[in-house]
Length: 362
Length: 144
Image (cartoon, rainbow over all chains, first blue to last red; front, side, top):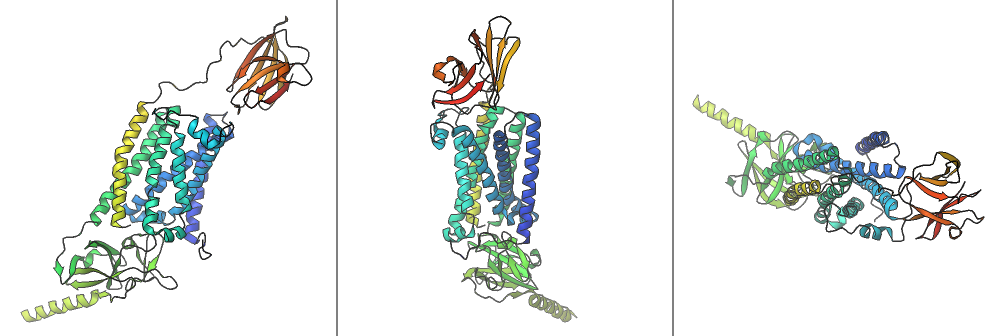
């Protein structure tokens, strides 16, 4: 790894995020351990660690999986997305504690290698009820570790966002395997309706939020039935775009964010160069388009990150006809300056026409 | 997020929405009818009334019980789960406390109380040796 890469770039928000995360984890562990000691007074320290770390990691994974769709459904959840990778890496470490303690407790005291013992001590691979559920946990942990170790921007840059995102989508596979791990493991042993209910509630929440977000975002991916004007597509009215915010449109296969700021309109690619984050869901901060995911910034009129940063996105031409916004989906090369479309000029023009019309009538 | 990536997410959840309910139903369908209980210990004799001698380590508590006559009973309580796959109990009286010099009484497994009738074999200074026959090593020696 290059010396130019800092392990973590800290700022006030990240510190606050991590403190809240640590507080939540401490609270969960205190409550969980207290309950376990009350219900099972003879529980050993090793068993307590295994149960507490497994439960905490599983709960954290649910929270992580809910953050993405929540942020897409309601922008107020975007701050949770900002530092989600810290949450993911921490969750992986907690899961690793669970895995190591299990391996030591149940597989390290025999004559067989612990990893081999895990795969061979129970060979009921043809049975659902007695399936060696630990195998599911092991492979899930492998995926989580792969994701945690590649979570740094170094890997994002070198693997390319496409491969990196594909790799990190394996979290869904890991989640399904972890559900199988719990359903065929602790649920078969404890048979507790409360545990089954909690598990079903968690899975339904995660699946429900993802489905909801998918339905909402599918609308964004549908191209508007736009009127055409010399290569420009009619996409929306000026009033539909809030000040310092954007409207995202799919035109001619291009994902475009049209920003309104200081009485002007500018169009840039909706895809942040960092992780393909949705720039159009961000806002203008200090004159820069700010990505809602990790705060990468671009100037709206040229798609360039302010110095010393070097990221650039494509820009597009806009036209205003009356109150209607038209966009040309042919992209300019990344970082190409395009003059913003002035709303005031158009409005002035419109008011002059209206004025002339009124004078003519008189 | 790109439209392509959003499509991949939708596809992933399309499959998960089909798979997860099946997984839940299958897991619930194969739930065992009874909660597993520790294996019963057969031929466990009832405890003789008097405790004549006792000794304790972190792992085991051992008591020599008697009934007033010459009848003796050795009671071993496994206090913490054994980390050995197999554990045999020997009663010895020799100075070296080697299992091969003693009498094999039986085996230990999960956390429980185990009793072995030893007749008149108690001796004045009995030593109990818990031995792992797989690793061929002594797990613990308890002097009473």
